[in-house]
Image (spheres, rainbow, N blue to C red):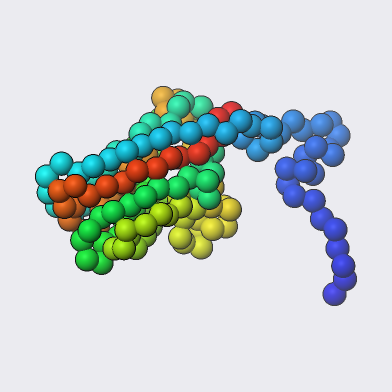
Length: 163
């Protein structure tokens, strides 16, 4: 084995000839936020959806570690999925709904604070970040695996970079 020095893909692009300019989503982007506050009105069966909000159109990268939320779903052994509704990408193609594209089966049976980094190996390989290229924006949602009780709460913020 040997000691090596290697460049990230993004840094290597800045050294290329001709220069490859990084997108704002990868370099020099400004953080933006999408705040949400939700209180369940009545009882919702297992599989109920909580719509958190809509990201703007364009190239968006959610910074999962900076996207945090408080969750108080009181059902025993409650888990949730966080994902996106169907949308149209920047090439005009329909991207199918993916209810667990960001977080899959997060255990929330104890009230507390959580991140949107993701909890599967595939999501962790992306650094806990999630990219969307959309024509009209992307709706982010929570799908409750357990039933929702009256007054269950989800409050937080999605932090993202818009290109």
